[in-house]
Image 1 (spheres, helix red, strand yellow):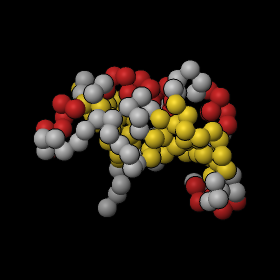
Image 2 (cartoon, one colour):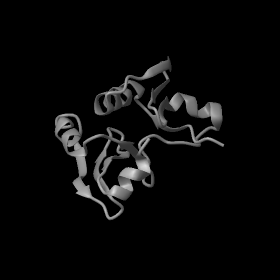
Image 3 (tube, helix red, strand yellow):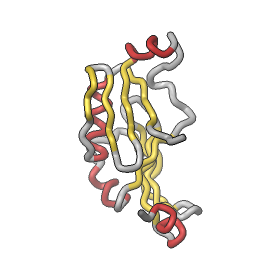
Image 4 (cartoon, one colour):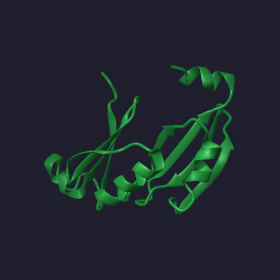
Length: 132
């Protein structure tokens, strides 16, 4: 089994895709006006419209209702990225902080309120974990 992607359901696909394109520097591949994907070397962030939900199961997902998942992106320099996000991110939850497990992390919310973590490994063990 391979973990392939995570999908965010939103009421405004274009707005959320534009946000993630600016925040990550990754261009989205659009399948339809209701579905786009930001493909990175390690994983894919899919963004789907509320109109796609009934195709799976009616009322099975609600936009802007996440309170348990954090979407994480490995970045080269979290402090530099933090500076570049000014004017784009409306709510920073926590500024760059070095976590006990060795990552320097920046936590913020996307326009739908989903938690996003940009992180950079900084300890030898964390660097080794994410080395390619």
